[in-house]
Length: 277
Image 1 (tube, rainbow, N blue to C red):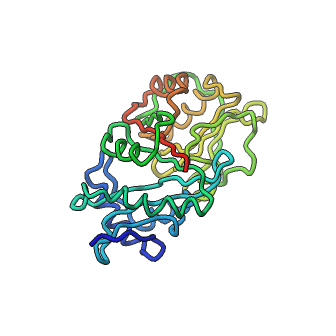
Image 2 (image 1 turned 45 degrees about the horizontal axis):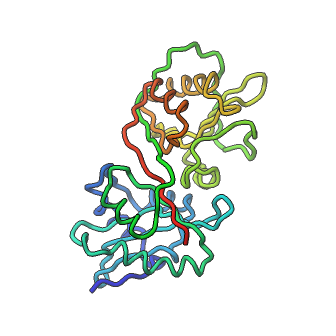
Image 3 (image 1 turned 45 degrees about the vertical axis):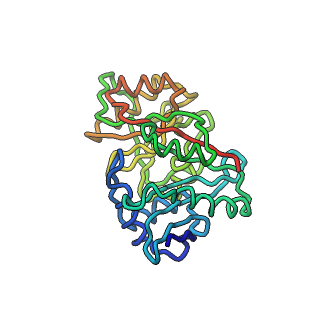
């Protein structure tokens, strides 16, 4: 018999094992360990008392993990991960976990819930729509080798800590849950802050994982991709054979065109979905 209960007493090693089983056949296969989940979900403000698992006896077979925090002035629960192991799919477990979660989220003062789902994942989109989510925007994901040929005249500086204050005139991308400034400050040990200056003023920056080439967050003075975006990404391109950027808002057409022209491939997209509780 399947029971649904919170994950507050379930070890991360168990959750990681079930996570890997659930995502083994996903569009983008994942394989993680408990240390990865600990760091990622800490940065995402995951609350295990408001996250749920589906259990067959004592065996975890599905999970619904929420990060809870303020977002745009509203207390929001972000679905950081949902999965069901293959043998238990088709039994409505995601809906059952939501039925257990939503009353407790409301009691905790949550007003909205968000999530991100790959646009090709029609089964998940249908399930989330049935629960009450709707698509708010499309997010573009890029990867590849940066190939910028313009002259690079501004020097790249790297520091270990994200500055306490980033100049207000620098417009930042992206602005999704796990790329928020707060989340990346929590995850700071995994990242470096790279920036370029002109006349002793910061003109562009990127928060970069130096081990993987993942660019989690970046910004340009006055939101102008040129010339400072070109200078920044040209410098970054000399450091990595491969970079990855997730969750660029599709309405930022100038930025999307720039990244494509810089040599990156828009390999996969996501929908950001939202639901009012």
